[in-house]
Length: 451
Image (cartoon, rainbow, N blue to C red; front, side, top):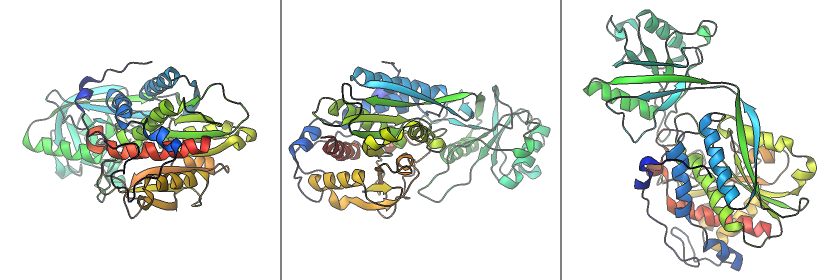
């Protein structure tokens, strides 16, 4: 199994969920009425165990960008864990688009509670490194900074209509680089890091790096510039000819023609996001259920699937489904897709059952039944119409599937502020209590389907 150096990861401490397997859960409306199989799952699953894998993914590896080395390292770690558990593990490769990334660092230190990866423009200098003091150039116009900005790294508010003009001015004034700052989104949403597109420079790229940071990074950079000189190193890298991987793990020695129950999550992230909740939480839920379910008796084959490149448009799960012959599709009883199952954001009090067609199916029915047995029925949503996660790939071809997630009470669109941001860390965005409940709900539902 691949070993990842965690550095300070051991300092991450979260309250450990503490309730008896047959006791009433925090936030549950009623005491549980568990079956023997539910108890088999509940007494074995541990969010604390899952947290150790999450430290590797979100701290040891960090952002896991589809097709890049970071995603390959994550796939190697996940496949190693599942192989050690005794599963038959396969890496399923598929091609993905080029990626353009950047990294910020400072000898004086940038705030350590944020990740400082950001996106690089494909229409500017790549595979390069520059150093310079940071200057806040506001909108980047003639009047926004002194005449002499030679060698400076400019902070400029991103405006689509002026993006190429301000880059051309920065080049003419001999600036070292441009850092575009996104407009703030309406709370609780926050803007993600991005790779600025400069279509007018597609044939003749800008000779300096041009990058796009996230909203949280933007405010930290601007605040630092106000109080002190901020020297910065900015490096850009083009990742081309990329291959992403799905990690597929089957229980061994089961019928190759019998029914299949799938538990899944995506393990990649967006640029600059350590991806603790999105979707490190779903990924480690799969690893922990793989540990628990491997030795419990079942009729169906239990298959765990960890998707690559979900954030680019469900690429990994769609590739997987496209390769499945109809006879293999027909074997699948239900797909339990877990995407953002552990946020610590206080308003995320509802556990959502999300279906691409808005209709109930075997997956939603089994989780609803498990919620009733666990005393959680008032906290789950009705089956609600929503795609945009890997369950959609299966439902598009008629396979029963759903996405399960903790989100705001009123709507599944109410996502936590750290969503898709450098603040999606264990410390800022993980509740072990919610992860434990998710483990029990999905574990009980999947096991009930498999027997």
